[in-house]
Length: 270
View 1 (cartoon, helix red, strand yellow):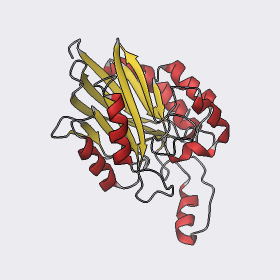
View 2 (cartoon, rainbow, N blue to C red):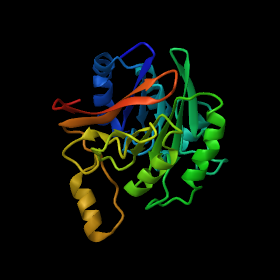
View 3 (cartoon, rainbow, N blue to C red):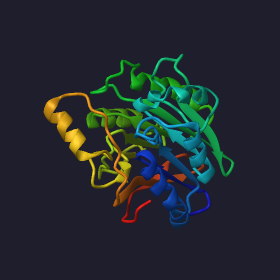
View 4 (cartoon, rainbow, N blue to C red):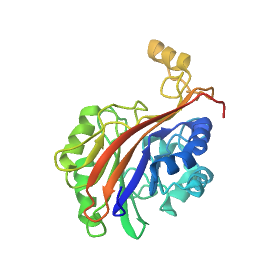
C-alpha cells in the first residue's frame, strides 16, 4: 500500500484470560504481517469470568499497542471499572446509554499525524437494556466528529443482523468503517458498501473454539433446556481462534479502499 494509506485491524470480543493471552501472543506477528498502523479491540469480555474488564487489562492491551478498547452491554458488570471509564480515552462504552452513565461513547486519537475517531453504539433488538436510538445517536455524534476527522469507525454491539445491516447502510458513506460485535460468531460478509463504508456484520471473537461463544458448552445447553439462570464459565483449553478484519484507508479522503477478514487458529495452550 502507498504511504497515504493507513492500515487498521479490528478484533472481535476477546474472551477472558485465555482469549487475552492468545491475542497478545499473536499481536506482534499480526502487526508485522499487515504493517498495521492502528489496532482496536472489543474488550467487554476480557474480565476473569468473561464479563466486563479492568483497568489493568485495558492498560495491558494499550501497552501492547492497542489504541482503543470498545465494549458493550457487559461493561457495566464490574462496577470497579466505572471510575476508570470516566478518566480514560482508551476504553469506551456504547454512546447511546444515558449521558450520566460512566465513560464516553467515542474516542479521538492520532495515527501518523492523522486524527481518527471510533464510535461505540449498542443495538436494541433482542437486547435487555432500554437505551437511546442508535441511528439518531450516530447522527448526533457524527455532527461533532466530522468537524474533527474524516476517518471514523463504528463498533455496533448488537444481536440482530438486520439491525446491524440497517444501521450500516444508514451510515454508508458517512463513516469509514462499520463492524458488528456481540454475537462472538464471525460472519463471512465483509464488503465495501455502495457509498464506500467498509462493513462486516460481526467480527467474531478471540477465544476457545471447542465452546459455545467462548463458554463451556454444557452450561449453555442446560440453560436452553431448563430456562434457569446459569453462571457461564470461559473455556481455556486450545485450540483458540482470533477473529477480525483489516481495513485499508485513504488517509486523505477517509475512504476505505479494502477490507480483509482474518482468522488465526492456535493449537497451543496459553
